[in-house]
Amino acid sequence: MKRRTPPDSPDLFPLATGPDFDLEMRKKKAGFWPVAGADEAGRGPLAGPVVAAAVILDPDNIPYGLNDSKKLTAKRREELFEAILTSSLAVGIASSGPARIDRTDILKASLDAMRRAVLGLTLKPAMVLVDGRDVPKGLPCGGDAIIKGDARSVSIAAASIVAKVTRDRMMEEADRIFPSYGFAGHAGYGTAAHRAAIDLHGGCRLHRMSFRPLRKD
Image (cartoon, helix red, strand yellow):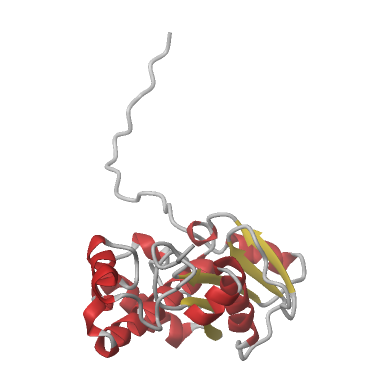
């Protein structure tokens, strides 16, 4: 029985494990170009908007380190946010506020924000890669839903970063307008501190009144 010889060189060059540009290149080879990535941030919170972004990256100038926004530190997200805005061919951002979320539902509001983010691109895409299971209706081109797309496509990862940083900045501004809720600290998510503030003060116009515990059945 032969034994496997161990490597005699140090592991200096680990393989990349994050998202790449492979899905985009496949679309390009199929005749769809340019390709945009689209994602949203803020489906789960009790307050604030859901924010969507669409990004068309420059294949020759892709920022290093793009990844699912949830896997990055706040500092790194801010750095990449600026790099994405500077280097990309086009970036679109849109949001759906609490009133729209309550009037429809969070999925419809999220998809509509993504649709408007794509429509806001100054360069019309030939294809949109959308994070998740659903493709928004009313896109100006075809779209593919990509499960865990922010971990597979750098275009979607870039959109996730832009959406997340934009929303966080919006919630920091909300904290200045409604200081009783601590929005800058929890961004509207249902933390213990946020729920305690709701119990004490009730909801404000940034809260999603269709969400528990704000919803009154």
